[in-house]
Length: 329
Ligand code: MRU
Image (cartoon, rainbow, N blue to C red; front, side):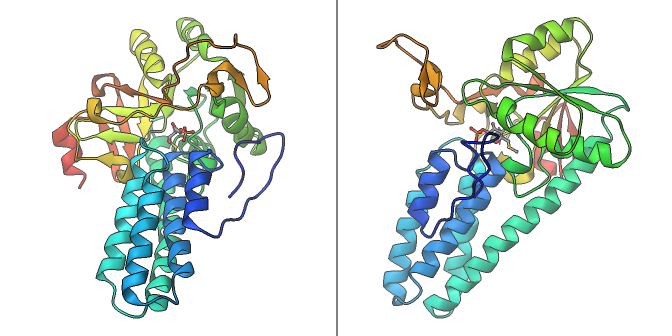
């Protein structure tokens, strides 16, 4: 995995050999972003299977169940984690053969999850690119880019695809406090590819919107409830409210693997609370007073009524509702 905690100052890979180490990597945000977490979990399952491949069937199954559990405990909000674990678990249960043969099947499946993710992002990219006018100035929040997926990205995939078809889009990346995915990761990805990008702090988007400097918003998501409510990085809800106030379209790039139809509303989406040190400072620098009370919810929920459209690999769902979402499946 690329260590996303230290980008863009350093570019380093970390190698993993066990499911529990992969779970730690997900929890510590070495890898982050819903689809990337799903891919990492699929490979975590494959690693567990390879470690257990000389065991008999009972020991293999028991070891694998432990691995599923360890991975499922890593982070609660991005549903792609549970989607990937379920997919791998079902395949394991339906596969026949020795432990080694099943381990190989699971490794092949992890490769498939990764390959499919890139294909899906490309489809979402071209569906979303059609929504953007030539010259559009588009705000994004957090990082829903190649780093957050197996490649191309969801929201940033829309920008990449728009540029590929010759549209001159420019990106406004907000910082995304407290973990700075916008400042560190989105800005870096766009600069790498010479896609015009302007960095702002999180409290500047309302000012820019009120001055007519933002034409659209495109963000990613960690989980969409059956009714179209969208969980995404903390601060997304604020941006959506502002976009509504200024009549700016608010789009969510959302692979079907991120839609959780087992829940009927965003109020059932578990919101991760992260360590307070992410708010009291950054890395080695603490700026808040010692002993201060802190809250650090990592995600918020934007109600479906504020969502102009969900950009999926099967097309764009305007003004999402339960009925429209069900038709996608
Ligand atoms: O806490 P993170 O960095 O994992 O949160 C990521 C986001 O909120 C992304 O917008 C979302 O996962 C979509 S990534 C294509």
